[in-house]
Picture 1 (cartoon, rainbow over the protein chains, first blue to last red):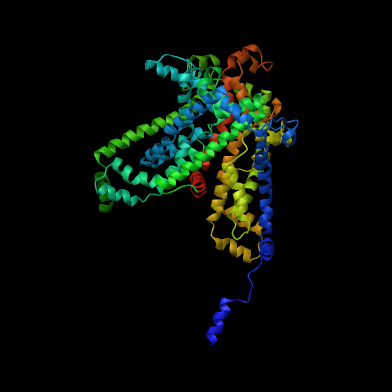
Picture 2 (tube, rainbow over the protein chains, first blue to last red):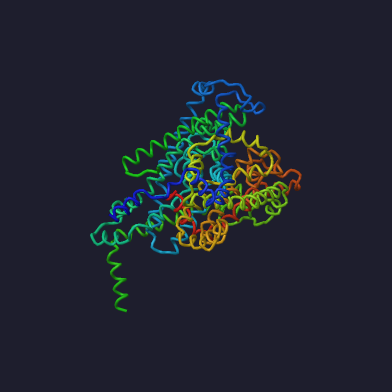
Length: 320
Length: 303
């Protein structure tokens, strides 16, 4: 009998579940300082990230800065139609894909390979020196990197001289459309390979060393060890970085291209982001440039989601 | 004695001949890669001490200075735009870095907080900006609207927070044991005290790396100033550097020196300008190197 009453008390406690208002009050009493701390961050995002999103409405207008978003005339989907009829549209999309796919094909595996090789260095001092030196280009500004490229690829520079000994014609490489993409990709690898290898090296150091011992006892050679132990150990890191990379496949950065290209290489070097820059900021065709930019962002978002989905299906892991 | 001998011997047996060849081969490749990373910067430094004639005769091929001289540095450091470029970037750093670090720590602390009712909603509000943004043009119009145009604030305020860095900060706060902050809370410490006196000292290594990221980002940025700054004397060093590197030899040094001196250092001054603007950073990063792994690891795997 007593037990029964106790049971009922447990099932129906006297304390009422606090109402939403009460919980709100309690939360505020408890965390008001935390909310206060978040306030500047919220304002920052509102002003510098969400306000431009509102500004995106300009893609449906003939925007003029004088009239603002509220006063500019509405033109519906006109700017999107314009883009699909723009004779440059095909060229910039093709160039963007071209540059980003070659960067992906060569630039993505490069830090993985570098990390594998650094990981095989036995001598600690040598290893540290290689690592430190390989990070160095990452800290060189893009302006300087591009001028280094110009120094080394001028027709009397070092690289054309080397190429000449291999039977190529001496040439100002940067002015030749044929060499633009290789220069872009190779200099990109030069600059980020060491830095990007850091994360793979960290993942490598997390692999259980006993696995290698066991494999060696079983007579596995280096290549077999890499294939059976190292690469599977690196897989989660590789997958995550690959998804992230896919999400920015169509956002070839304009900074380096703006610094490297010239009228003679527009045919291969003009990409979506540089076109947006020229249309919007140099020609003041704001709405049109913003519309192209929006399409670019949306395609990237779709690519990210699709890669994430495929990766979840195939590799069993994704970003979110 | 016997034991250590054994150990050495056994490892020698385990390394097959193929593995040893691989080791030598690997050492050669690593040396070549290191030289490829180092040489362009070394060349610039050496060229900055050489004469223009020597540079033009050995473009890209200087191992040591030829016709050694410090003349280019003297000219570079007298160039009014280079001086104002350095002044501007220092002003930007002095105002930006404290602002950025404060914002990052606050954002990281909030994202790592527990039992906060609207935290998830607010964090989603932040995170959304990683996947979708207005893009270049609306961002540009927005800043002009706000009056962040043709003044140094235009290069300071909009970059006050990188969400990516805040996530790195959040992750390093996450791994602090709850007991540490809870006991402080019991003792009556508020959020500000917990943050400044417990959390910040514990995550100092991460903060050092973030400081480096922000600092390098500011130092190396040229695009924002290229679109937001009109007056030459407000441009930071990278934009001046770009001007120096693009300018033809005549216009660059107009009025600053006599023609002979200008011609002697016309090319050299480019290299001196690069060296002055690049070497400082290259001297700093090796000291923070041991923290890189931690910072990057936390940010990309857990974020």
